[in-house]
Image (cartoon, rainbow, N blue to C red; front, side):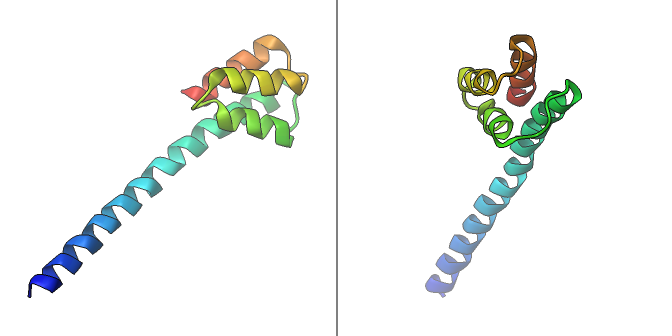
Length: 87
């Protein structure tokens, strides 16, 4: 009986942990999409450098900005895109 309780507790904990990851992931993706959508609205078509910059906005705004500037995005547009990605 004790073994069954331990297994049930472990499975419950794993389920909660996995569901927390699944709920957190869409938020990060939404921020990346906001950044990419802003770039596209400003005339910068999607490319992999834009994705990498926007992806890093949440954890490192400066890296986002540097990547976008290296991809020839105007400084003001890059700053605003990184702001949206970090939100």
